[in-house]
Length: 98
Image (cartoon, rainbow, N blue to C red; front, side, top):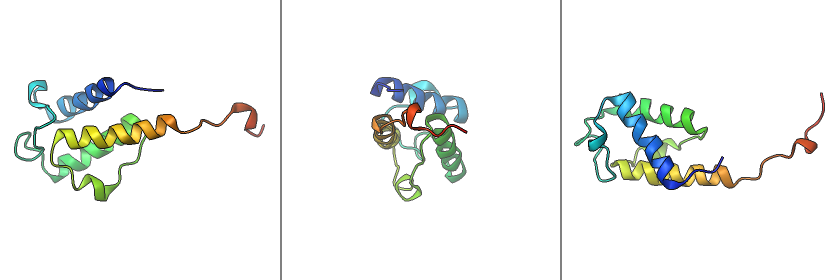
């Protein structure tokens, strides 16, 4: 399923609001995760798991450690989801019948 950048950002922002009880107004691209949203390392781990489950992607832990703002997450997840959506889907005719 292909997503627009706006719908993906809205879904990510919804995770922040629902999982971490921050206000929707606070979830802006320039919001700093620790300083502005008061997310600690346990929150960060929970956030990564929620994103992976929601979008069916795997986030690189090394890259995730570099996230400082909501916008950093938006950009990285957008890239991964776009790559996933662009990947060729296996044709049902190519699947073995069991």
